[in-house]
Length: 241
Figure 1 (spheres, helix red, strand yellow):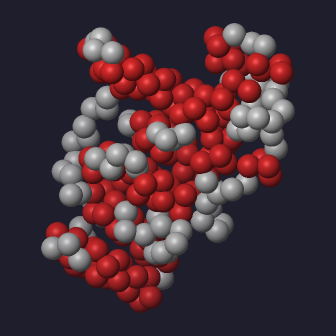
Figure 2 (cartoon, rainbow, N blue to C red):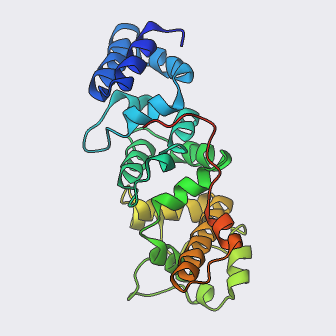
């Protein structure tokens, strides 16, 4: 790390002072400007960046959340799985606070995450408690279990719906973006399906593989194939714990 502020922040993270580390990064912005931090973060280890990001969300903003680039953010959050956060609440908060920050282009972050190995696994983690909602949205074009549905989508077979995801004419939105503009999981699911269909498909298939693996495990019939499909190779970087 070439910048002394980064070394100071890294040392503070190592002793567990995340607030002090974030303050050191804020000081760089105050003394040299926003761009200085954006450039400096390219040299900041992803595990250290993640440690700072995990401590802040939309309810407790940090200058790091506001300035982190799509590539920097993607590299950091693929390490989040090492924390073993069963409900992935921290991941949920980080993604929402960064993708939907004021002036952000969510598409840039989604593309950066989707292009990185393990990125779709992280997005599947984000939706881990919304599997039924995502499946219903895929089949019916809406999130409302008791409301009107897209009959044309419901009449398709599963394979036809999967193939149609990449066909903008065949997979027209049943809901408009404004109807799901919650800066949360529904909006992200909508954007993935209609703006990044290949990523949505991968995330959906990962969620399905995990559900099958969990069901097999409960029935005592788990197979190595299911375990392999549901797991992610560990990144080479040292854990941020």
